[in-house]
Image (tube, rainbow, N blue to C red; front, side, top):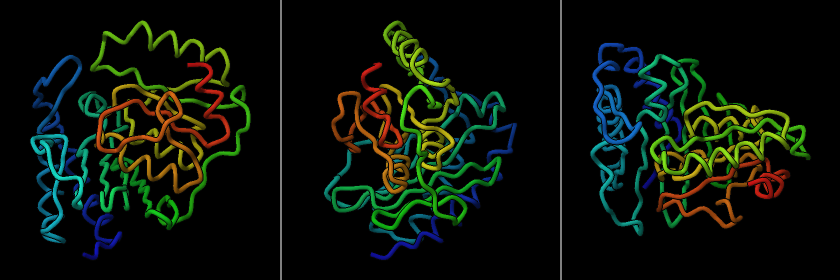
Length: 255
């Protein structure tokens, strides 16, 4: 099996015009509390899935919409979130991305996070580094939480976590430079990888939210764990704490 990064870049970039289809973005289905899907989500997933199958038919496919059933993690698999940041898409907030990862041999081997509104392409290959529009990227050099810009995720699908989440946000805010809330975990992980953010955390994320982003952060020299400091299990939903590797422990203490 041979998958080229340039093929993945071309595939996600070709799907970009679908994000500008406001008619499809306005066709909304409710999946759960604060959990929405639009026709853009479906169209992007079908487009990317078809292109990936043309590249390599033997790789399994796991997408957020319709194709997220159980599959064999002992075999290679694509993990796709066609629109990470659907609520942003609905509101034309322009902070939504395509997140695509290749799972192989028990790990994420390739990852792409593409911001179609700004044509920003974040890519990584396990052992080969992380890149932004073809240029190498590294995490920030912030050594102290007090100087750091931290992005938070509010876990909107889990309103029952609101009190505990906002207690954590308050503690982190008191100790850091400032906080942000973007609304796309994949994008926030990409921003951590390139140093725009010093860290990011959110509870209850799914593999398609973070698979590609975790690889980006790690290949850019950062660290991603759960809230207890344990390695992230890409095969399951869970909590994510990403940082430049210097302030992760300080964020964890605040949580």
